[in-house]
Image (tube, rainbow over all chains, first blue to last red; front, side):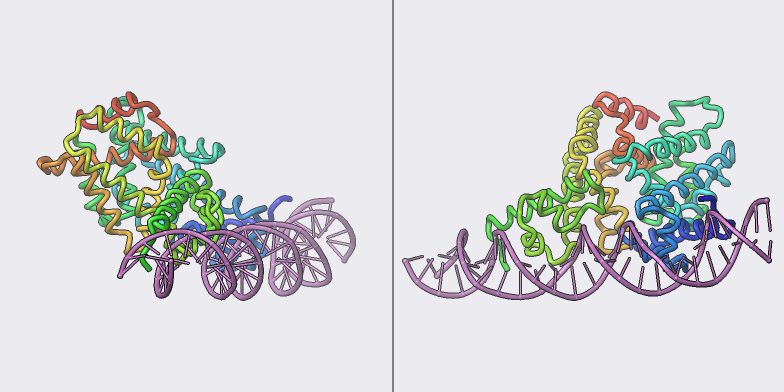
Length: 175
Length: 175
DNA sequence: CCTGTTCTGGTACATTTGTTCCATTCTCCC
DNA sequence: GGGAGAATGGAACAAATGTACCAGAACAGG
């Protein structure tokens, strides 16, 4: 049952492929065949490494969320410029991961197993904004606004530049 | 091609059924058969009134968003309590419509035809908060936070009570 | 080098799904 | 009330999809 080095790489390639398919074709486009083709592996590889399509899908969502969580941890106490750059890249460069992260939230509505991941994300966002937890009330509101901003960037592509993101963040925190 | 009175009712019943299926089984659960069964009509009715599954799905998303938009228009200038009650009902009672509204945003990422609907929604939210457009900057941030709050309610079910929602809204606007 | 395990890639099959078809019934309007 | 168009519901079919299977190749550990 243990995975070979090469096997592990293939597994990761499949998970990455899910994110690309997700960004290109949406959730309904995530099929065994589409993901396998995107990853450049035969169909049976997708069923070999993941017992079901659901496990493949959820594993990819989880992975994207964990990566996002790590990024937030790295932003604890960062200045606004660094925060803006990270947020910009996330919504525009790692679009697939960003979409996956929000789709995980949607799944969490109906799956208890994903609730913990969803809450962890909210917690990490709050900690990135206020590492010491000194202003819980103010942080709550700021986190909500940042969340709204992330969505707006994903859906409308606006703001599109790092400077635009920084300006929007400044507006949020300056009040 | 004109619709009978009864035919129109059946069409609406199908669109309503889509929202219920959406809330129960997620987007992937929206199939001709599932929706027809939920609406209590034969399978062929779903294909008779909608030329494709995609048209059925998108029509339902659009309808939910339009209803939401109308609700926002009715809230222009309303006090915080009324706003809180409306928001609460939307996220907890009309859950299906709320989910549909956000899924429309997701679809808008890849479909230009839905962009206008997504932007109209943002506009309506802003107008509900600041009918006269007197404080554009302040309104932008408030709208982002309210959007974040709506999502949080959908995903985590928190805040769950009207009072809780009102408190959260008060926190948002009081700064 | 040998042996048991992991991996490969191709095939096959049952199910689900979207869509079409059609004979019959119902509705609306003149 | 009669006729044209709309609606009904059941059946059928092709395509897509999830999953199981398997004979052979690659690999890891002793």
